[in-house]
Image 1 (cartoon, rainbow, N blue to C red):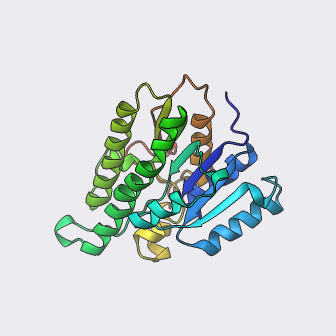
Image 2 (cartoon, rainbow, N blue to C red):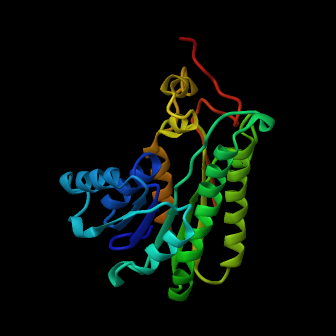
Length: 262
């Protein structure tokens, strides 16, 4: 196990869910955090919480970025403008991602498709392209991509979301091959059902529909996923956990779940 004390950890989509949970566990491990998301007020609340609960030594150990990973010029300028003390990023957690809609392909929304592809695929690529060259030049680093069980198994009406997460899996595998010999590690975490804002976002804020997704079963929590991310990041440098499929006990595949009768 290695210490991540004073390592710089960059987390996208850090304002809630898995991203916020990763921020908390890495803060407790002594890391310095670059937290990025579109919702700056939520980032600010999270940073204050980390300081108030003494999860992190001081506000100086956190750097906040209002960032939309879909916007390539914004990503490039934000990374280029990082202060010198924050440039040497040790761990990149590509967590920003979403699902929009649950429609048959021939009835799907172009806007939903574009938002998923721009965030889940292009946003991840922009971040990786901007940060990994520095890792290569320093001879160390770790990229953690948050994928999904949907990247392995397509399910009805999940077409484009599943395709975007299959792309994350392919990109992760390709990046690992391209970085062979550089000492930069690549991990993909593929969660199954996790109760976060995910379903709320998918159903455009319909909380009743979102609640039904998890009814009668015990889903994963954001903390469960963050715990696995932290485990992967703290292995000895010669150990790379390339891929983790993480599901609740009540889930056997993308479509097969056990629900207790209510």
